[in-house]
Amino acid sequence: MDLARIHKKLAEAQSFLGKMTEQDGLMTSRGFDDYLSAFLSAGMSVRDGFHYKQDRPRNAAIKAWRAKWENALTSEEQDLYEFMHVNRNAEVHTTGAALTVENKPVRVGVGSSYSDRSGTLRVMGSPSVLLGHDNAAIIQKRRNYLTRNGTKQKTTEVSAAYLGLLQRMVAQWEADNR
Image (cartoon, rainbow, N blue to C red; front, top):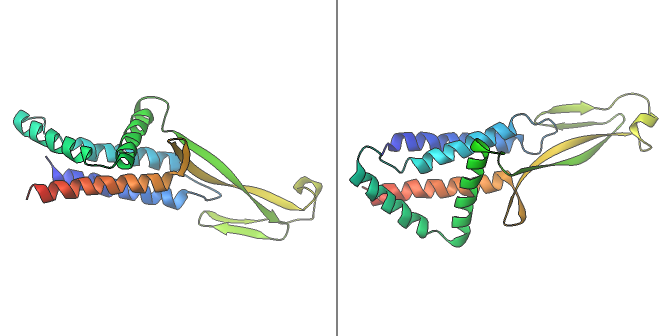
């Protein structure tokens, strides 16, 4: 098993989670879906790293260790582990991850501005019927959610919990195989 490659994939997953966190909730979000896809793929590469295809006895031992580790997870952790696996497969092979995007409206009055990390919006000009009777423009801030077990959860929080599981798996392998 190539632990250097597994650590590289963990670092990639961490980086893509960071990018998702930066983009979530901005008025101009760029690439959140791409970062989620990359995060899910990096996570699967970590999981798939627990195979050793050229050596059947070694592969059998790794599979047995992985099964033992997975069986020791709490039911909540097992659910998360499987949920992210299903979403990765859907992202790569079928309809995409079960991502729900909601827009949160933010009113910005004439003569005012709104700023976040994506930029600044200034509403200028004479009050107009085009802006509505309260003389405000409305921007939409994008929020990203995954629905797991009927509950809508922030995608970044679900992803962070999954990354934590993957990090634990690698740490446990290293502890067990010193």
